[in-house]
Image 1: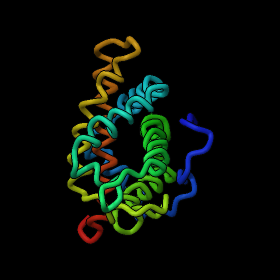
Image 2 (image 1 turned 180 degrees about the horizontal axis):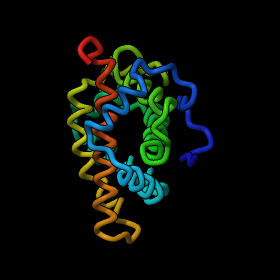
Image 3 (image 1 turned 90 degrees about the horizontal axis):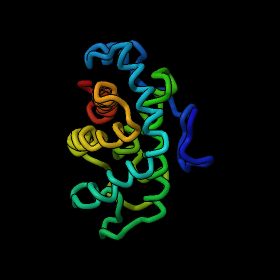
Length: 196
């Protein structure tokens, strides 16, 4: 499996606690998003295309977009609004690795477990704990759901950067978009577990 760095602080893939979401639930959500064998093929193609672009992609999302939106940027700052550079670096590497995990990892029990861990790290149950920082106590689910649209739109130039056909880029983008919809459905579980 490709990794963005030899050491990624707080990256516990393969060692996360078991997700309360079953593999059958995951399969049902995949059906709901219309996941196909073709999507599976194109998400792997997207992984090949994005493998050396994770840093500029995540920098675009975090510095250029999130950094310019106060209600989003505050979640990576102290309660007084001061930057947390060490946290930015550590969480940035995990964000980059998430791009590769989205495209390259099998959607199996380990992947499902880590999706739950990612979700928990945005809720009041675990936010700030991994890196021991003092920031907002949680990221509202509404902000996560809303930002998915931005991520889906802004990834297009990165998917087309390696000279693939327009059709291949369209198919990679479709697979990426479905995967993010699938993941945000999983991330919603700890926010709304009683009705999930």
